Image (tube, rainbow, N blue to C red; front, top):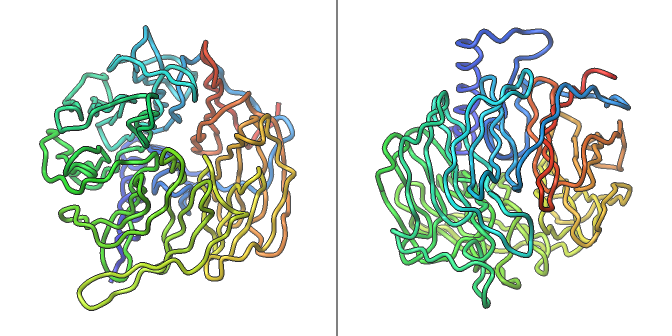
Length: 436
């Protein structure tokens, strides 16, 4: 029987192949695989087998184009010849479609007033999702918009306030997304869109992808900052959700809670996305460490228990990746770690990555078969082996300025966005297969 996560991965691959067929992309050593949502086609930071994996990095990669970008912390995504950049324009959160060829603008649509707090610039913080002819944009204050891929025209939109969510902002002690903005990218599977909203009976909400119609809504938990992750655990298809109170599994059919593990931190600042493998969920946050959660079947119900904790590997604002039952991510303080997910033990750690502020260090990771590409908040790229024995560097180069965004990778090209202060930054396209 296919697991839910495997079905999700195969659906993503099928979409890639359909796009390839109808757009006439060419083969050379791999298919031109798009990067249509946060952390790639399967939202786990893993490049599909059809993608162009790197074995080394050029010392000075070729910059194909570089354009100015407005304020924001949303990561770029790439689909069918367009880069989608979510930025501040005229004090509105605006979705912009840009040509992958030369960085020229195709269209721009302003959506919702910008949000600003002490954590970053004025602008959107949630990465868009592109599925076929639709672009989904979730704004910081809690609105969801569906746009037409070609024109940017709004097809439908929803204000979470009408569902009972009251956005507060950086006031008092309100925790989670209502404090620092909605960063948890919606999940699109088939004809459904799943979003973490908040408010009574609206922790997770299912909408029609075509019309925005409400299909079902469930639970009373406050959403954190991590997006819902699809998985099959103990034979049950579910979404792993990181709420303010902790991690929970919810039924894909109706949102019923299947299990939960409390994790309490200051202001519910849960950012790192959970990862699932062989009925083990790897999740964690600052103050509580990285944790391994075993999910088993207990009669007709599911049971979850923490089987290990690793304080050294605790994630803060970075999302780790999984390769051959080993977790690779950024621990605290600012160390690259490799952790065995069965035992929870740190296999190795390394502190050679460069960060402008180690206390707020951030790194993004892309798995390329047996190698991992990392981008630090200082704009440094490092390619290293997914070794179970030791840190083995394969290449290193500087590609951009200070950033907190996940890059997009497609066809040997990396799309990076820098600038975490006011006045915006840049969107840069670099070819990692060519030298200056």
